Length: 141
Picture 1 (tube, rainbow, N blue to C red):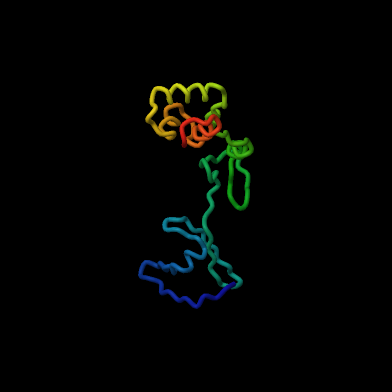
Picture 2 (cartoon, rainbow, N blue to C red):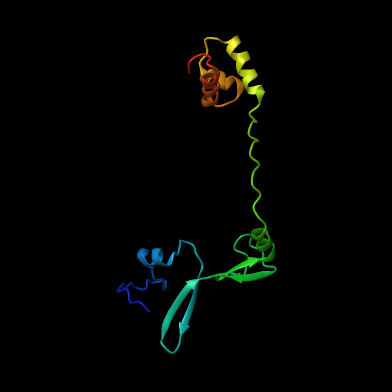
């Protein structure tokens, strides 16, 4: 047991204020339920956070298993075992002759536009437009 050297007085209602340093060290938050124990032999009071017999994730009281001093229900355990559903990414636009054709069309329609503007019009990266222009020796990028 570690001696902290902290002393607190009991108030008229029988309360003792736990020093903030100790609360931080033990990761106790305001409003956390505490469980008290008294050891007759050593005449010491011990306390720890109260862990109710309910699932820490959903609060269910049915089908509980203990994991690292916490209760977890069987349905939450099953949910944790299943791989998370990854959001589907938008399919990358395939590089086809369409890009070249679309670029030629917008270059013809908007000859004064910049490569960035053309890229935005056809939905590709500016660098891709610049590469196509350089490859075919068109307007300087």
